[in-house]
Image (tube, helix red, strand yellow):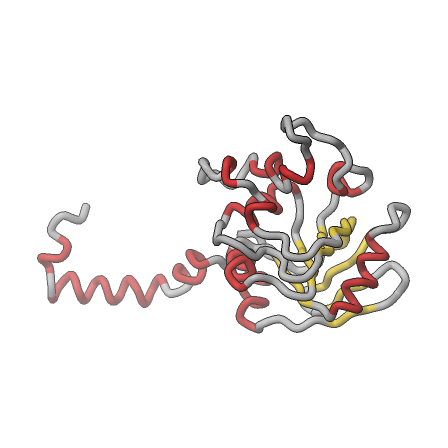
Length: 206
């Protein structure tokens, strides 16, 4: 997992509440466990007509938001069923940060485990950032994880809270496997002792 520190990029406004994981990535795109290629299915039902033809009307299909790295969303983003493909699809498109008043818990945790930063801000501040992002002439926002600040182009700074453990994982680029590997020496010592005391557990091990 890549380390996350600061992102300065185009912010796309998505003023919709209760965007569920099926809306983020519909079920027909869940047949793969690869994390690449899912961007084409991101918000598929919002980006296509009944025949599956792209309409070009959705915000992420319009310039300059085709290169968006930050998404400003409505309340309860990521609700619905648990699917890790949802953060994968956002990341495959290029989204690194989602800002909203609230997130569904499972989606929130899945996103951090996959290296994407989710920021909770009060509704009024999200509304202000939605206005900023809605200006296609200057929709660029800076998110500084180390300082825990969101910088709007008008000079306004919004501080945000984040769990210290989640922050450290993003800054160091540590997912669950990375966290486990940090304990490699301890794990190796335990296995060595266990191999001597209970060798039958390792008879079939290569």
